[in-house]
Length: 376
Image 1 (spheres, rainbow, N blue to C red):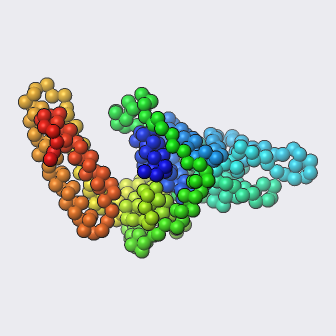
Image 2 (image 1 turned 90 degrees about the horizontal axis):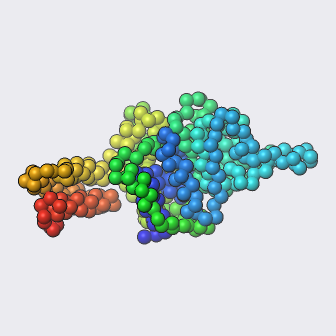
Image 3 (image 1 turned 180 degrees about the horizontal axis):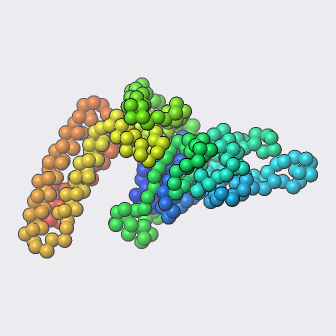
């Protein structure tokens, strides 16, 4: 396992129910793209951004909560009085956004017109115009957060600059909630120096994008158009860098069909479009993977039923036998999916993970409900 994959696993252990956001944010950092997290306060958006930056020593991190009263000085630095004496209008950008590698701006859509233009230029061009002179900015990724989507037209350009978008909510699963409360998760702290990260970013750019992937992107675009979901040409173009980065995160040298799932967080504009985009992207990216996920969900429901607090031993055994029968059917169907995937030369990836998860659940049922050793 590479340091990058160790880092990913540690973050997923620490931030429960945030696997997709962590994968997407790491992918965006590798691709030098920007991320938007939309969700209520207290969903660890700021904590995740700060933790990410701490894992890349040598990077400058800038964090700020915007309000409608925020001033350019807060974000870009104060005006230099010494420069004013020379009839120059310059800002002192030390420890401010123009010198940050990674930044987190909370309530980003509260940005007012005095901040907006400079922010757009910095995000898009990695340039900060200081006293009329363009100053190179080292910005790798800006992570923006908001409780809601922007409703003002002037914020549309800013919203569009975030290539990767996530809706983030509170923890749902009770066990994960307990893990978060106990604070026992995420003890290790793998770090990747800035120089190594920059080397990874250079390697990402060299990854191969097969013609099959381009054809699938065209199909996704056409299907979305029929549903009146329109993404700009620039978003599709920039998404190629994300596909390369996702493949790199998975330890591969070229993009495969399952990498296309990242597009489910790229091509929607409104929450109402999310389900449409997900259905089309998942069906074309790897329909077998989606089917495997459905089998996993069925297995989880069966296991939850079998592990209920049965007061009668006979009822418990009966539930275990019923679950055993259903698990055998599910495993048979997963085996069929595996065979078809192998026949078509696709990647097993997540499908193999599901197969092992279902097998482990089946063994758990046999051991705890029926007193047997394993499912074989």
